[in-house]
Image (tube, rainbow, N blue to C red; front, top):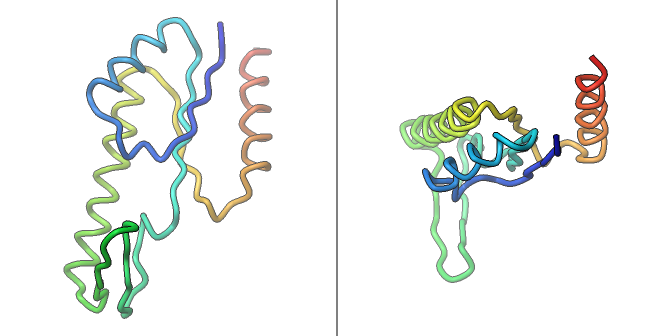
Length: 119
């Protein structure tokens, strides 16, 4: 079959995307590669951050322990939902931080895929 690698932050994945992935996985070998910035996973403690979407600016006070916990819970929920969507469609997925060199990760990914084919 055809191997398809989807590299994304998956922030806009919804039930329609999940259905499309499920259909695609019936005819192809799909691998989801979720890329994320470490700040998406965890905010630095005891800091005042300035966040912008390009139009407006917001100050975030990470001295608030409840804010940090909620932020980390939201991240955990997001990644669990992404994993659930992949698993329900029998699709392999993995998360890769932007801190890591993409080239080494992709080489390892292709080597693992080749190894599975030779079995």
